Image 1 (cartoon, chains in turn brown, green):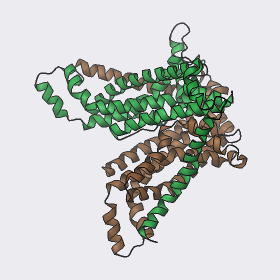
Image 2: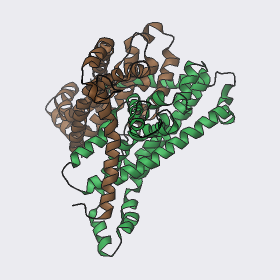
Image 3: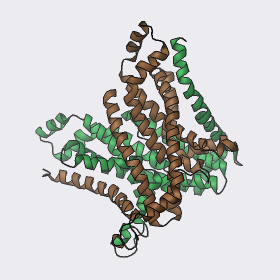
Length: 263
Length: 267
């Protein structure tokens, strides 16, 4: 099948890239279940390190899940109506607003975290609570939710559908609930999975916003990389992969589906 | 409630949130950058003081190297995967896109597993080969998260290319090399520039990867971090953040106007 030289070259570049991406991932999974990494696999397989991770970091895993859930609810409450509003009024003002809320996609999380710290760092109660981390996560994930829904809404003839419903006496709220939300569902699903995946993995903002009492999963990861033995760090990474990879695959599936509908 | 009022009400939560947690903090950050001893001349200091200038140059160089390497690898792989149907293609595609949402710290750790003291390369090669904490390690880390981003943009564009044009060029006697140069590359060019801008911007701002690998290397995100936490030089941290933010924002604006998509920054 791959007879020509060009194809062989292309194939080898592709396989090399795959190896580069996959091998360290496999190594970290193996290291997490190896009794002694320095001696190699022959030292035996064990779940000892995973247990140890659970004992040390269960709190941070639960905190991450909780923040991801709260982040999902917040981005839905803010993002779903906003996407509808932007879809109903496509003008330069909406474009500017969309561009503005998308800033966190472009501006590095470190800079955003510094900005938040500058303004709210002195409010001790807020600064020290988990809601401060939540604000950072919502800031970063909100544009994904809004754009995901907006792309689906922009592809359907919302105006005609709504006029039809209005002529039958539906109030704006009824039209939103019965027409907009069901039609936007593929976009909402794709957006929701993206928000949860990104929130669980968010590090750049969170590292600056967290306090010693509030460590999320990736903050704990950085912690274990710096201070734990390699097997524990790997086991923790393994736990993270087990959480994030299914979410990631679901997210890619949902996004592809939403994109097909939007076209 | 009239229709107009309802739509306005729909936008209110977004307006309040982005005013309170995006617009005002960014204004505050900008003002903070001018509150140091140097005043607004701090932006000149970035160019005048060797430490900051060297940081900028190094960050740009590593990011450029990452960008061009990722473009070369991902364009080759992307064209191959979108033009050939074979068993295992989906598998290869998954392997190359899954790292998209790995946080930068995890990628840093994966590079340590490759090139650290207990790393794979050091174990299988004779002698002492440790590169994880050098510029090479940083470059490989940046490459790790750039390959999936560039690949997705290139593949989206490759699927829109018309294979009939290549057929035509070949029937007219063009060599495979000329087909690539004269037909495929011009068609892909807007997406390649867009993908390059995304990769460059992401590498410029990558904090997580630098945080695990660049403890001894002065790249921009690490310098911002140390200025803020260790030196308490808040004005300089703010000024560097503003410069970094403007550069990455403009780059992604270019990317979006050329390809219509942006893949999340981060890393």
